[in-house]
Image (cartoon, rainbow, N blue to C red; front, side, top):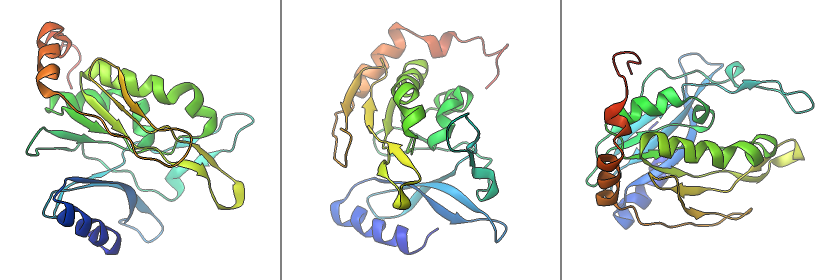
Length: 214
């Protein structure tokens, strides 16, 4: 990264004059047998302004479900990423990161007002955990959470993804949610409302940072 995939997306960002979040894509790792799971943000000029490499790797073995060992092919990142934009600071994360609230608190402490969480939750975990965790991360950090999610069955039928992309506000209200198929969702983000909420319920300011440094 950059490479052919980002080049094509950068052209779209320039054409439409938009910030474009590129989901997560494979990026060449430090060794030939592994790649990074990388989240990229482009500005309206098509320039890469942030690149986040997924920190938490999906190594699980739930009885009766397919086992996953992401660490066999994915190299973990080691940096928390928040980037300034024309409208608000944005924090980046990927999929399984969602289960680790300490990452999101660090993003909030570093100033993030919007957090992206591109994901591919399984049907089994997604039905019980997806919306609950997204809303929790939004509420805990009084941030807008934008969570694009892969939906459908992979080739060969070995894995199906839960989908239900959503946008959640800092109070935990779901502003928009996609159905169980491909689609587009849209929501307005009100940063004055966000600041008002953070002042009226100042949980970020009230945290015991001396006991729980972040």
